[in-house]
Image (tube, rainbow, N blue to C red; front, side):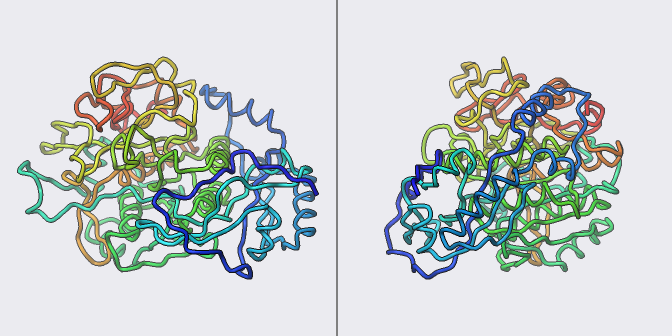
Length: 519
């Protein structure tokens, strides 16, 4: 059967990789085939209203979404027919999430999609299975299949947290630390405990120790929240005992959210650190009809340029679905300043750069008693980390950012040419970090990783008080900038903080009560 290249599937080898050799042709894989959305025109019309902040749009239930905007039965049938011809098995099909998961050997997948899979070694990401060039799909699946994920298994993202170095290594300036409850009080969060809500947390490895959580919440005098681990793609809660690794991320996220919204259920979705795993975990959370999270916190990401166009669009499609279902998604904007650790130039982090998430940047906070005496854009130098932020090259300027400018390192205002990151900010410097307990040790942690769960917990409190989810909040926040504390000092390398929105701290840090009123 005639085949042609799948648009956006082009892939190159990670820079600095060396070829190890061919993959074992008999090795078994699972590959996710993503299909187009049924009723795409109606979906785009609905999204347009949500982006414009139309107050008459009500969130769709997960059931209604599946019925209206899943994959068409005839499209799924065509993919299954192709799989049968190629000798591949159908592991599962999920019309609501628009995926068909296929199983087979490397030899079968290489033939089916006209790719060559090889092992590569890279100095920092280790050994991975990779491919170069495009994936090919049969002509009769043209326009039906939008992405084929899982042939390549290189690590896609990194956690955005920073553990504070030992005290003697700190700068002369006074370092402080806070419990998440103290941070919530400084930011004047409205009263509440998130009762009746579920907060989803996405993790790409590591795990938590139940004993850590029990001790931590007990020491805080907070009733321990209900935490459930949800395994995605054969993953699960697997603590490694390394606080500097993914365990640090997992535990930080749960402890921040659980301190501020202890009566909310916390569902932690564990997956593998690949583009397929990441997308699948977020999709699992968005469509989870059992736990029904109303807000999702993501503290992982990677430079926008490191994603293939097909992965970026597949992921963005999941985030669009979240917006129509009234699920707020809070994402860390990164800890490596305006370069996002890419080695040069200004690069934003994805998924923070999606226009359908609340991108959360970082500040450094100084408190005097119960009030904030000073707050500046987080930038502790090249070794210490800085707030991720900048201008997307993948996504256009959203309607709620029209007319805004970034201020570059020379102090010159430049009109946005793409989606500006971040939207909001919060305390992220390890020098004004969060007191947490990880793998049995009291630790002080910073990073925009702490800001995403901080905002998620605020939204859970607001949702619980309202009795209804606030959903996609960006249009309302941009229409009410006075709900935020404008940060006008500091920089993240490529951009300066300035009056109004900026590419270091967005609209600013929260006044929780004003945010609640605005929503």
